[in-house]
Length: 259
Image 1 (cartoon, helix red, strand yellow):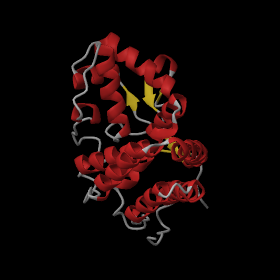
Image 2 (tube, helix red, strand yellow):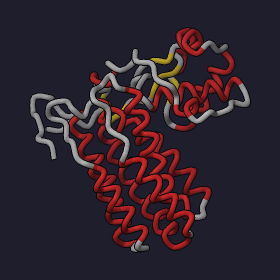
Image 3 (cartoon, helix red, strand yellow):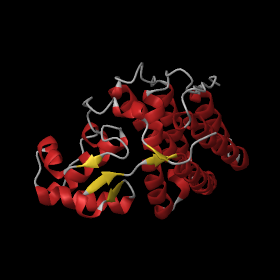
Image 4 (cartoon, one colour):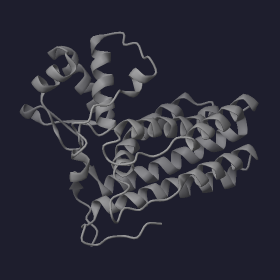
């Protein structure tokens, strides 16, 4: 029977000691304040799994790790709490929000609804420059390999950056700042789950599929301005990712065959 309670996959914790450059550092982000820097660093480490789901966030440890003071770190944790990535534990401080199958299923429904609406608008409103950006984003993603094993965090990070860039580019022509903001928030939550699967996709029993064809099919439907087909393919793509993740919430005594 499939478990639905909150779970922190043990396999993810094995990556916690692996250093990796943050996505913001990779693109040369400039922090306006120390709190902004703290926010960027902690968020990035949550999303790439360095800070595992359910783990306690001890201020003194974070101060040493990021070489930042108490005030900016507290402000960052409060902001991350409002984003749903961190949870306050009263007098015990903060912890990374755990992952669970129930949340994954709810998140999948939300992603499907929002992405379908935004993609439909983008297909109706997007211009030729938007089309060119979609083609370029898909091309980069197809040229980006998945990591070889769970220690290859840098490769996983690069794949995730380009994967998110592709999905963001698809809906970027929708003309709605609110849809883009909500998409970013949902994408942050989704990234935590994909990180588990990407880094451990070679585990026996984990489902593996070729997403290159899925992304290319979505791209082709978008370029044909076929909103119905594009949204159908997008829905299947998001659902397939969620389905592949269920392995990590099941008893490992029942291996599943790759699809």
